[in-house]
Image (tube, rainbow, N blue to C red; front, side, top):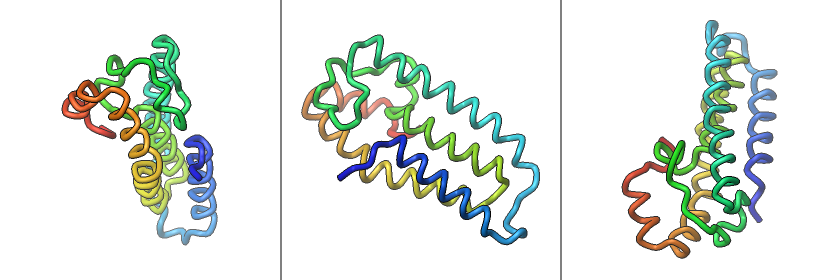
Length: 147
């Protein structure tokens, strides 16, 4: 059973906060606080257009029914990343780790990326490959999975 990506993001955020609470003070890295705003801004700049493009294309945003996709969205932010929504979620976690100035948080972001790739993205890519065939293969050849 897969967990909805926003819930996965919230779970990782909770773990980052818990790790920060119990981390020794030497693991803090001063100065990262201000970067958190930039990372959060980038996350919003990726997430909002990504969702809007799906809505305008009248295709499903539901990550559990990629086979119901009516069109392969490959314009806009999808020219730079095949998964800008998940990249935006990852950047939200980077923003949180930066806000807390905790280096362990960045390791947890790597865990989030690995989890999403293995348990969510591969499933979606298989469904999109079956649905769009060569068009999806060509898209994968042009655009990287994350960045």
